[in-house]
Image 1 (cartoon, helix red, strand yellow):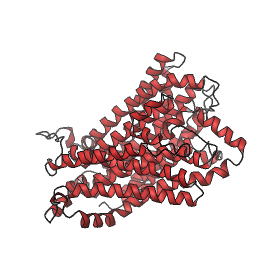
Image 2 (cartoon, one colour):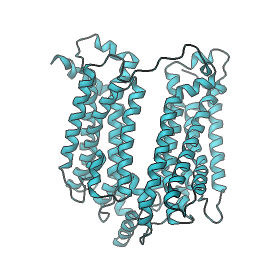
Image 3 (cartoon, one colour):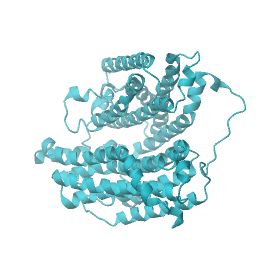
Length: 527
């Protein structure tokens, strides 16, 4: 087959070179599954604690947005299916997207693909290799997760069903990423398109679960298909056939698009730049121009989140008003109503997403440095502090604006259906959450500014905040542990006497991280 000539040797070399990028994803998702089985007996040792767990989770729609429905929490495997099922599938899909784009369009942008194309290699070989790598990684993830979870005490069939959903998710979004690689004008655009499809599918799945929609609606999103496998509460393998068929269809479409695509170009052609330099001739304008596309896309997404979550409040108010055992925790404690406590938890989830947005902008600073675009700028009269400040302002301002947009839209939509909720209070709660997001952005900025080899700390801060905020109360962690999350210190604005002391301390910590970033960037070497 001349179209994929050279596939085998290229796949072998690519797997060896990319194994260090793939392995952390496999370890992360496997640990998510195995730790659930190990922790269950320790945290919920008796029947009474398990009944309380079932009552609490079953009546908390905010957790259903992220983790999906809690079908059977009376066993370790059922708890594992709830805690790791939806999240594991999401991360597996994200892994596949990054593998495909990194080994297809990113190689074209860097010029490596052109060097390979000068040898004996078919037109479809590079994309086919990238998708084969992602498929191999997805299947390997499923196998490793099954074996490790089994070794940690998981049931053989329950663990197999859950691990198969991870593999199925990765396979489905392998094809989606392949299509995005042909549509996008460059690797960054392709990544944005694929991740946007992934995000929409996940949010739709979360909305349907939280709203307790009709069972047939599960088939409206690929993640719903995986939920229908029902690990540990049915183990139905047939929906996996739909996932495999979807993966084959999208992979075939990706190869068909690649056959007619110009090398180094996408179906969405990039717009030509302006004939004369405008505001981009200043360092502030340049920083905004580099991030303009992603900022606009993210802000639109946050407005959409406000609409989606706002319409979700109606069905949720019926659930919470029907003898719910839902107990507010953290910032939601002290809220004036159960519904407002739910909205506080929604804004916590939005805040974590906003932190991802801000950290992504911070990481762009180092990406520009490794592409050798920063040193020429600093070779002139531009100071290091001014260059870093131009990017830091955007990294702090963009997530704050995003939170305010979501808070405003969420408040307006909720008020239209639930007059007892004040739009101003929802907006005020969103504004109060901003310093907690800033401290996570500042942590990433400190790592990139002072020690870029430790920049992974920025993402670890977001992951730790996610775990402590949403799962910490569930695992009955000590208050000082929960306090590591900056969101734990955000008070409810509807409480009779909100305590702002913790939030002030969080803001000071963020200021300290920012100071470290500027001091470190001033002294360290620039690539």
